[in-house]
Picture (cartoon, protein in one colour):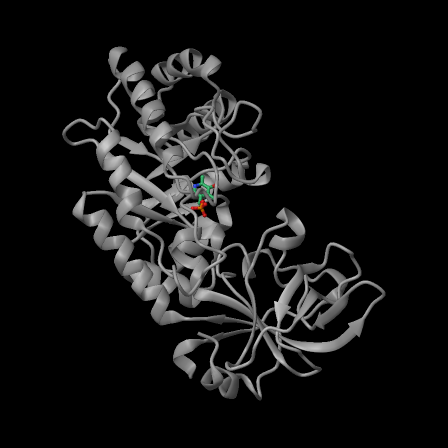
Length: 385
Ligand SMILES: *Cc1c(COP(=O)(O)O)cnc(C)c1O
């Protein structure tokens, strides 16, 4: 993908920058939307994966809803034209100000994560003379088989309402004058590549759905969250996640009633592969045990390797060279964790060469910081070519 045409296009550009392949993004969105539509599924895009304006514009234009985890994300999605009737608002720590803001815009649903939060939303809705739609976020205790920092559905995690509190939650809901239960919500983690995990999730969703229905509670929406993983090892071979196989699992294993809607909240799978971080080699250094490539991008532009020891494929921009040396590819930040990859096979490189760090469209630009007083993040879109 990062051929000599791109190398020429990048030659006079200031680095580092995020490069977004808008055509790949569009193909990914179309593939996901058609696989979801076919089954009558609804997809909300999880803004926290990437809230770059151009990316949001395209996702909004394709008719996706929005999944938000802060008041500012709710505001951003409304500003970008997302239909408030398709906005969900999750998160364990919604402030009163954020709740009031979302209430005033009539969002689709709050995904509530504790009994106390339900009581607060009920009070604030009463003050505003409104009824708040809520989905109960249930912690199903399903192991997502992913990195422990991005696992959210186990008993030890802070997210959702634990099984032991569901009886009480149902009672609080029955007595809450200004809450309307629309559905159940589950989100068990991110970068899930074993589809059997989603099968286990379906089993739990069915159990909880039955539990509520046996108690005479109508559940209109089953929101099964996001978490579908992408192929970090082979971004060109598997540029688009297998949405058909993913949705098929839910189609087969969720026991939905007539008129019961199934909602998803996908982030990473929609945007990860369209983005790459492009950087220049500042220096090469031969250490006692290592060859280092020192880039002008660091953990301040892409934090995932430092934060979760995440793997990203690293390539030299431009084609035709054979891999000859193993480099530790590092950034300029004053932290030893500021390393994009160890012993990465790359063509012999020198000062000024361009390096692409792939699959950086999700949880990349959004996590950038100005630690070390770094410059603001730059980006280039493929349609500027
Ligand atoms: C982060 C998040 C998502 C999106 O997760 P991905 O792994 O990026 O698909 C969905 N729902 C909630 C509640 C989240 O916090």
